[in-house]
Length: 193
Image 1 (cartoon, rainbow, N blue to C red):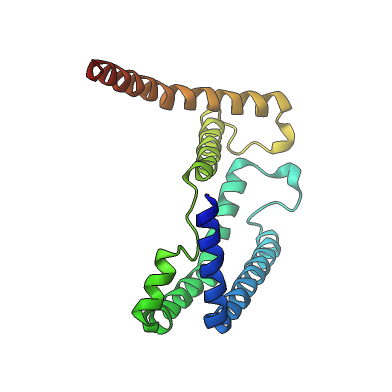
Image 2: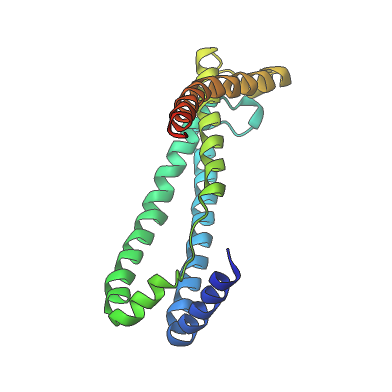
């Protein structure tokens, strides 16, 4: 970010805080309540999952099947108790507050990038990790270790499985990237006199 953009961003934030400090305080309070609520739902679900037998109480008996089932159920309850109310609250804020701001002020916040620009370069890491973990789960399933407790796994199996997944990801995504890059380079070389 250039010095001018940084200065502009500070300026727009100062203006926003002066004019809309009550809404900023409400945003912060809502974020804190949402995080605390998400943690409480997580703790409730962990206790409930053990009490109902959804997952074993001791970790050495867990399997990938238990892990995936646990995560899917947890996701359901988090979306139901936290996600949906947060989406409704965001929609209400948009309708009741943001749309009622004067057009000049709203446009000024937008043009000043009040909430900043996301960096595309740092957003890719999460997707790569997600794909590698999905690949690992597929490999565990293909190896027929879906319902095998983690306590029976060796460290070598874990390391070599992740390595195998990473190699296949490089092959699956690397070959098209190399072909596309070569075609692009060839096209660019032909354009240059």
